[in-house]
Length: 162
Image (cartoon, rainbow, N blue to C red; front, side, top):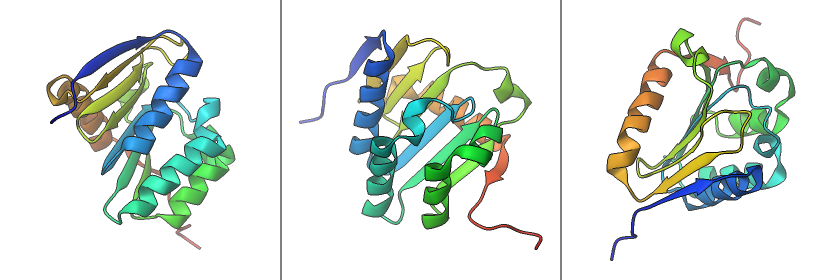
């Protein structure tokens, strides 16, 4: 029996954090993240790091794609993210979005083409969590893919040009 589709409105940061961790733990193959600058406290937390590490360790084909609008904070301070990039260089890809991405203000997680978690404004807690609904997820997956296509690498496992 397939899981029933659901849609839930979240109104506080704690609920967003729990939904985010739930998505990471239940992911099977792909996690796509679109956010401003990686400064949100959950992103560098031990539970978030551990959930991503477990996901990446399960299968060599599992991947995490991250598009940042402003990468400077992540480049300078995101030690757990950079550790994951070094340990899983073919699975964790961190890019900076193009011009269109900088005009957007939401935070978006798309998981396995069937789930999404979207905080409508990076500074506000109001969020939408949708699960087991590929039709509703598809436009946001396409939006992420468009941002990905216009992006370029900003954090890599190796330092080139030495």
